[in-house]
Image (cartoon, rainbow, N blue to C red; front, side, top):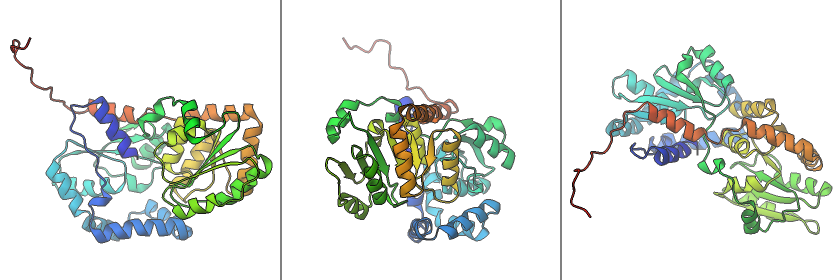
Length: 368
């Protein structure tokens, strides 16, 4: 999503640049791609302690075996980049700079490598000496990158994490409420599953209704159809409103009409919630980078951790009952958010590239 956001910004703001968006994992070998995606989901969903150990150990020291397997599986990606011969490769995933760094050292590729770090963290996997420029979420991440790895500060730009252009615009709240059948006089809480069932969403909704039956609940379950069906079967008190949704493209609109957002602390979820200026209740965090994201939100005063149904019930009710508290948290979220991060990155990348102006036509071309 971060890569798509920057690509869209480059095309809209700098149309003379030849820009394309590529999924680097999709261009790895089939066996590497399968093991990578399946293994990640298994680790973060079912073997969290093992994932934490892997995350921490690779942050201390790069795995030679892991690097060798990545190089072996990523040969098709390197061939693709070599054939395209770009001036700049802008990476929003750490796999790409790992492969490109080696190719640059071997003299196979001449492109500049720019990296967008899409979390509030500076894991070793993001650092490669061949990277020409970094775009990071905050001054703190800039300091970590400079002090930990010695990256010159002039090569690090604090832009925020890129989100889609619609987060810079104000949606039509009345139209959104009509589209979803929401009452503007009743509070609305948005639950985001983030693709994983990170927390007992059903128990949280039922607990919330025990205190506030007037709450309108929107539950976005992504591509987890099993979760969506389970949420749709929840027993509802009289007058309760529940919208169990699958994958949606209009998260910005849903956040705009929500008084509180409950989600796990993924890089994009937190960035979008902050860009929308909405109080965030963090219902879960994958060890490592998502814990860092949660820390950043809490430090900014833009949300709370709420890791159990009881905590979600308490914090949501607290925010809904206290309008001043809710407004203060929302204001701090808006100050912390960077809705124009994609445009900022696009402009900085374009400023470093020579753009060939189209040739001028003849002064007198005969047209009337």
